[in-house]
Amino acid sequence: MHCGGRSARMQLKAQVSMQFIMAVGFLFVIFVLFIIGLASRYEEINKELEYVLAKDIALKIRREIQLATTLEDGYHRTFTLPEKLEVIDYNITIVNNILVIQTEHHEYSVRIPKIKGHITKGNNSIWKTNNTICIDNSSCGG
Image (tube, rainbow, N blue to C red; front, top):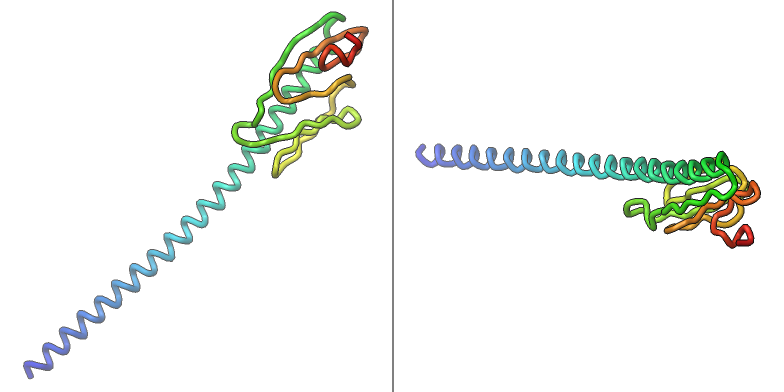
C-alpha cells in the first residue's frame, strides 16, 4: 500500500509539471502574438509619420513659392530643405505646376505657381524677377 501512495504522488507531480509547461506555453504564445501586434502597429505609425513629413515639406515649399509671388520684383530669399525627412529618403519633382514629394510608401502632391528652375535638397535660392519666380538666379538669366 505504501507503494501506491508514492505512485499517486508521482502522478500528481507529473500532472502539475505538465500543467505548468502548458501554462508557460500558452503565455509564450500570447506574448508572441502581442509582439507581432506591436510590430504591426509600429510599422503603421512609421508610415503615418512618413506621410506627415512628406506633406510638411511639400507645404513648406509651396509657402516659399506663394510668398515670392505676392512680393515685388527683386525679392530674394534662400531656404533650406533637409537631405532626409528625419531618416526617410525622399524625392522632389515638379510636373505641370504640381509639386510631388515621394517617399518609399507615400506620394504627396500639391499645386504650385509656375516657376523656373529646380527645387533640390539643401539650399535653394528663390528670386522674383520680371514677375517670374525662379529657383536659382541662373534660371532667370542672372
